[in-house]
Length: 194
Image (cartoon, rainbow, N blue to C red):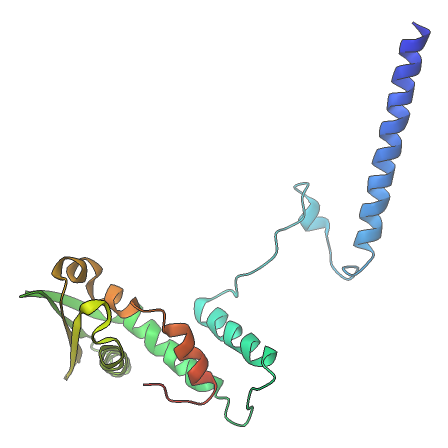
């Protein structure tokens, strides 16, 4: 019986020492590089908060990503950097994605998308994005892309693989090709990629 009590006493003592050591390590960490932060909110649920990666808003996050790339590149020519051009392009992207009306008409081998708005600013965005995308991506995936300006926006006629074209629709076709990030960096550097 004495050995059982000794075992339990030793176990409690070791557990207390381990807990105290872990607590001391945690206290030291909290007083280190992150001493200016209030960790009470993070620790309420027993675990530190995960690393933050979201910029809070998609356009802001896209600009933040480009600015970080420019800052990290010692070859950046700051005399030509134009973040405002990138911001204006992201406004066009937002207008086309969120504010345009799209109607779809089946054509042999694909579809014609009429993209319109009653708002002149959105109309301008539709024209800029649709015409530039068709010129850049014509032939990609074996598709033919033709754009025309209209009084209220633009049309995009896509032919090639009608099943995929019709399934993707206008906005899906606008996303095809991982050229957007390079395009954004080129705009920010002061180039006019389209």
